[in-house]
Length: 392
Image 1 (cartoon, rainbow, N blue to C red):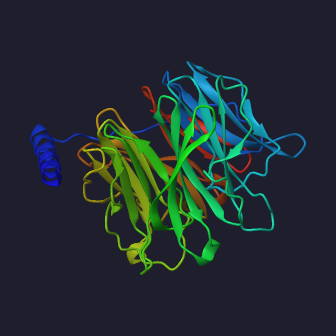
Image 2: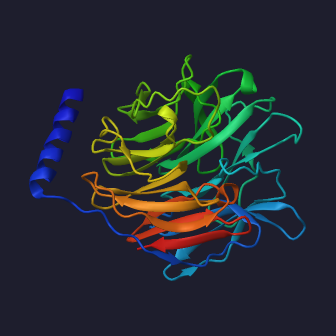
């Protein structure tokens, strides 16, 4: 099977080479106001079942508490902002981004991280569901055994994986900083209950976000791996033919670091095409790299460096209709950081870099891309409010 996959990729490469160069798109930034209020941050995207963009964020309330909220873009307007949960002990960290996904049956599922004890090490992963996007079920802990120990559960990502269920991918560090972390998956039903929990990798980098997508062949998870020699390269595992594949590296950067960089990979998919971008500092050269798969992640192209200066990482990706992808990342710019983006063609040709925004590295958070219909969206933080724009 692996030989056949490689032959398919070789045939695709030869076809594209004979067809001539496929040029990457030049992007322009079109700022678009959104429904998020002052004090909003931890922004994320998803797509509803009719293809509309769904924007979610955590927002400061008038009484100083916090709420998880969302809005949907319909045509030229945003819906009013709706509250999922409020007065919760949200973990306010740029890497711990809540999310909302829509199921084909019309239900919504949301997830977020809380700190049960402000002075402890515990991090709890919660979920809630809604049939109509207005009334939400009481939050429940997303681990199957309702784990409330002083353990770290977080860095979650989620995707609709069935008509009435979603797959929530997260990291579990039962011994905190003193022990290995595991890559976990929980299956959440449309009514908000936890149907299943499983461990997919018993030794991963414990404070780098996860990224899960659905390909033509099944689920794919991209994450930062770890081994006994402290090599922390990006790995993937795929659910195909009823089982999870053994984890494998997307590309062997061989980045050895005795610390967690809190900086991982972003995956996006459309059919069999999968784009993965990530940050690495192997060889003391901080950069963003990118690889493309034409067979749902079975094989990937050689890594391509797409950053142009000293990269901070915090990447996001969105596959386009032609098989290429858009990538955004943070990079040093003067005394601040800049949100940059560019298009990569299907043949691996990078387009011009466009600056989306600038600010402090902390305030900009984790910028996020979304491809919804014919529109490419980007969202980021400013330190005071979530901002959005279309990239054309």
